[in-house]
Amino acid sequence: MWMPEPTAESLRQQCKQMLAEHGLPEQAETAVRLHRVCKWLGVAQALYAGPPQDQPLGERELQDLGFITCWISWNALYSRWDEQGQAEAEFASMRTCLGDLLKVDREGFLAAWVYREREAIGAVMNNPFLYRHFWLEVGREDGDLELMDPIDRTLVTRLIDQQRWARLFEDLFGRLYVLRNQLIHGGATPGGSINRVQVAHGRILEGFMVAAIRAIIHGNDPWHDWGHLPYPVLEVE
Image (cartoon, rainbow, N blue to C red; front, side):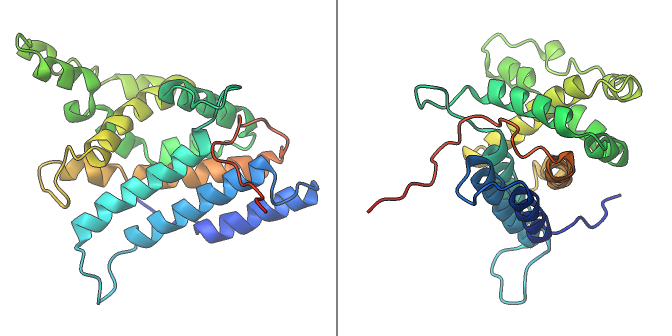
């Protein structure tokens, strides 16, 4: 069951305090990165909170936008540029970021999130419509219907029981990336009912981001290298 999370603004203030205690200026790359992460998460939380009375959008549309803005928050954390100023490959940068989060998470915020959301995580992982290879078979002229749902529905339980967090997160974000593509690239209708189940389960990303930010704060390692910040803040005269 979903429980209220700390607000993104409270997390942003905690990040600022942690960085200030270690003497990092607000213009430092880590400070800018965490500021962006928390501000986008704040937008997602506001959208998930539901529409005000004068809001023309319905609950479903807000749910779509909630996931999209939550993904932007996640993207702000994992994206990085290489030495040539080029964006690193999407999955490579995600994998690196997930590994970094597990390293700094000394208090187990991410594991606690997994145990709390294991049912929803299982629903995401076992949904064939969030499985990349399902759509690869659909798109082939000679696609094999028997290969469209090759999901091992015991995998999530095994990974959690064995505490194989890196593998679990890598597989989970592979599924969530498919949902991201459906929404970002116009592969779904705003507020549509066809993909509503997976969009609803996509809300788990909000809780993950809260856990990730808390892991960074309580890891108390402001000098951790999160990679070169894309589009850094520049002072232009």
